Image (cartoon, rainbow, N blue to C red; front, side, top):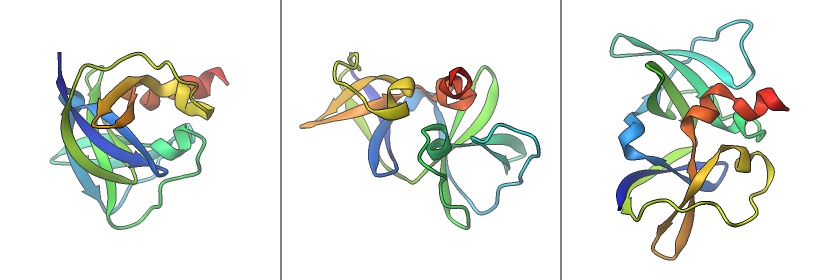
Amino acid sequence: MSGLFLIARIADQEVALPAVTVGSVIEMDRIVPVPRVEPHVAGLFALRSRILTVIDSRAVLGLGMVARGAGMTAVAVTVDGHGYALLVDAVDDVIEAPAPEPCRAIIEGRWRDFAAGIIHHGERAVLLLDAAAMITGRALQAA
């Protein structure tokens, strides 16, 4: 069974998220910092009278931080009834692809902790991310 997937980039790596989990793609100009939170929580952002917790995808993956400033790109998702904005470097496309397959390749670094599978788009294999795991920083808590 095929599905729609949002294709984004994090640290020059192409990744996918199931489009059904994506509320919108947003451009942010300012994130309000929150004291005493986990390092991967960048702060808060107001979107159409909703407050979203902003998660820095690079920080979750141990790859530094997404550049802060005007024009930051994020993917709005809902996990367990709460709104989040997952900072990414860019959003490239929405594609239709066959159902995800399990990861069979060796995935380096923290990427493997947040991989939900692989989707195939033409000749390319694209890593499918587990947004809920990235938001909770599940692998960070275990480290």
